Length: 103
Image 1 (cartoon, rainbow, N blue to C red):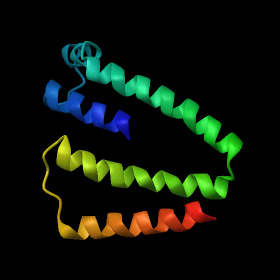
Image 2 (cartoon, rainbow, N blue to C red; image 1 turned 120 degrees about the vertical axis):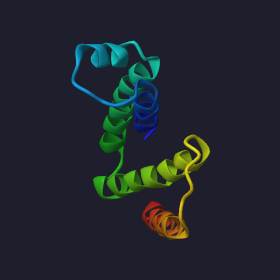
Image 3 (cartoon, one colour; image 1 turned 60 degrees about the vertical axis):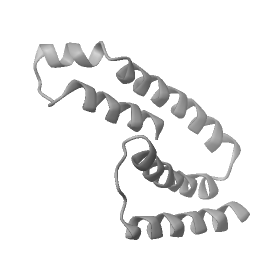
C-alpha cells in the first residue's frame, strides 16, 4: 500500500501523464517514484517471508487490510473526503480480519 501512496504522490507532482520522453524523465527524477519501486521490492520480500511461514488461507485474506490503510491515507495524506459507506465497508473488513486472525 505504501508503494501506491508514493505513486499517487508522483502522479500529483508530475502532472498529466503522457508517453513523452520529457514525462518519463520527470518520473525517473522524482524521488517519490523511486520510493514507490523500493517499497514494492520490500513488500515482495516481506510477502515471501509471510507465505513461507504462515498458512496461505490465513495470510492472503489479511491483504484486505490494505483497503483500510488506503482509506486512512486518502484522508490524512491526500485530504480526501470519504463517504460514510466506505467507512462502513472498512469496518466490515476489520471485523473479517479479526475473525481470520483468531484462527
